[in-house]
Image (cartoon, rainbow, N blue to C red; front, side):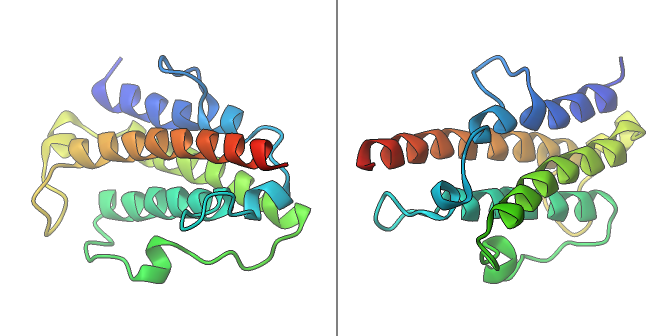
Length: 157
């Protein structure tokens, strides 16, 4: 299997699993209600919903960077998109978009050559490979935060 296909599979597994360290994002989010997702059980911390929007934003930014379409830093609102609506259907759409963003990035990566993976991202000082591994690590990191927020919410209720 090529490096690009392995990376693409790992990008998808960030959401769907299996992951060697524990649950993937879909499993971490399984059973989270819109009320839980919107809650702030830890003062000063982002909500689960905000984190999911943030992870999705960076997957989309990464896909644009892989395509050479985006190199600048995101605005604060792009980095941490606001929760626009807080109903159950809105939450499900947010979770669905998280999964779709990872699938779309994986599809964009799957056909890349080793040369393309080793090339620097346009106007940035790191390679496409580093960017893609960072996106995987970013999702994993925030998955851990979500688990802690779930526990905080459960202990408060």
